[in-house]
Amino acid sequence: MTATESLIAKAEAHSAHNYHPLPVVVSSADGAWMTDVEGRRYLDLLAGYSALNFGHGNRRLIEAAKAQLERVTLTSRAFHHDRFAAFCTELAELCGMEMVLPMNTGAEAVESAVKTARKWGYRVKGVPAEMAKIVVASGNFHGRTTTIISFSTDPEARADFGPYTPGFEIVPYGDLTAMRAAMTENTVAVLLEPIQGESGVIVPPAGYLPAVRELTRERNVLFVADEIQSGLGRTGRTFACEHEGVVPDMYVLGKALGGGIVPVSAVVSSAEVLGVFRPGEHGSTFGGNPLACAVALEVIAMLRSGEYQARAAELGEHLHRELAALTGTGRVTQVRGRGLWAGVDIHPRFGTGREVSEKLMDRGVLVKDTHGSTIRIAPPLVIAKEDLDWGLAQLRGVLGVQGSV
Ligand SMILES: Cc1ncc(COP(=O)(O)O)c(C=O)c1O
Image 1 (cartoon, helix red, strand yellow):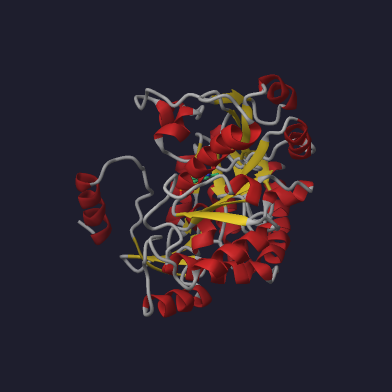
Image 2 (cartoon, rainbow, N blue to C red):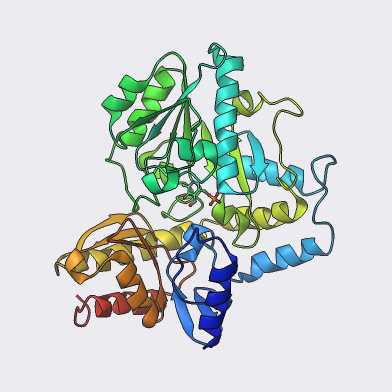
């Protein structure tokens, strides 16, 4: 038995089977590259679902984390600590907003956004008690808690987890007419991913997000943008909403905010909206801890330079040009995405997404399949162009395309 086989066998024997990972056991990583326990190197084209936008072992982030580790790591929110004010101020500023509610994981931030919207609905909008409704989109992925899967349309995510949390209306993604029809005077929020990641990197029709913005403003409804996966540089802008000139009422952030080091998430909004909370009404032991704030502050500083967004835009254009050429070969039926982020539908004749991912792994490239025939490509934004080209050459190899197309 190899080290890989033995470690996988142990993991399978002693962990819940809620994931189906590729059979690779990583032991170290640097930039866009990971090394497994056998010493084989792999190009990471997933980047922890965008949690690793700045790459593995990013020196600036590691140094910030190390310095904070030596000072103070956790106080709980029972006391103030000296990184908290800067974190909230600077994150709010990056978002063009006023207040921050810090949490840890993405799902917690979405839960917090749901609670914020409901409380705002009752306290500010004047919705009658227990009547608040939130409109969401089909194909959404906002996390795995009981409330969040209550408004999922993915049977795997929902089955056998009921009873479900009420108060959500699901409308087709990209369909403004359906959204308008679903709204009542008790609607407090629309919760959307500006690009649906898990669903296969689905970009809504042009004009949809601005129309949602207009409709929500008209109806005094909060527009909540879940930018946990799409935000913080991935699409070539700080936020995916920016591509359509849209500023939501609330950003929900996570993943890359923790620099791939610690889980950091946040709800960011106006003082009117986040000002609804009183002490004791919401919280988290680890939310906004000193280590999280120190890492996130460095992430914010890096994003402020605009350098990562520019890189994602430039390399993203290259990536999409190369992938578009593949659709001409018939091996790929559709490519979607923005910036350094792509959903690639493989023609079923050339294998399922899982089969293609396994073949890519054999060639030293790691990606993740989704929904049968789709693979997702989302490399760290720091990937070298030559490495990206090498990864794309491996994809062409797996699909049997000779040379560059
Ligand atoms: C858009 C979106 N929202 C929420 C989440 C949940 O984040 P977490 O896994 O950190 O709970 C994800 C995770 O993939 C996501 O892509």
